[in-house]
Figure 1 (cartoon, rainbow, N blue to C red):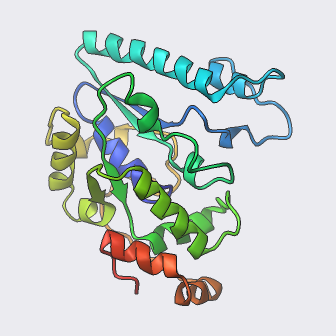
Figure 2: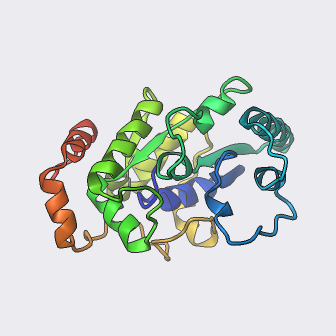
Length: 247
């Protein structure tokens, strides 16, 4: 999913399922967290340290190291009867300035090494863009609704064929939404999981700070964004693709 689309809420529900280990906001090629005036402290992060090295290594080697560690983790968890779920940080790829199309998605990195079951979650692009603007997560340029929707469409094309769940449908009926996710990802069901999400803490929890699962009203639309919507062909196309009302 993209940032500000309810992904943390849904991921917390998944993490509350029995015997499910959830890794949050993972992307081994991300450099978004390295945007500091000085080198950050990485005592446990081999990949981040490689990204910051004076002798950079190739993306191919970083992916190989990442997948080797992930395979060992998957096998170790399986021995304990646990399932591994990875929350892909797609924002690092599709909503930052580097080459979003030419580099592989997390799913593409993993498929040669293991069986991968995936699901894409969506939210109305106007709501997510307004939240992105409010958070000041302006990691691409120009920061317009047209550019945002163009990148959103590129994301959907990269994950073509992967089942989709809309955030709005999930919060309207979280029991049915979580049940469908469990079916798609072959995860154990537990009707009590939705009552346990307050105990689950994940990275990226920038919006919802409590365990209430409900639809929230749309943020006020600033005038300059309202004007952009009027002439954005990508916004109209994205709403059509995802079956959202553009109004």
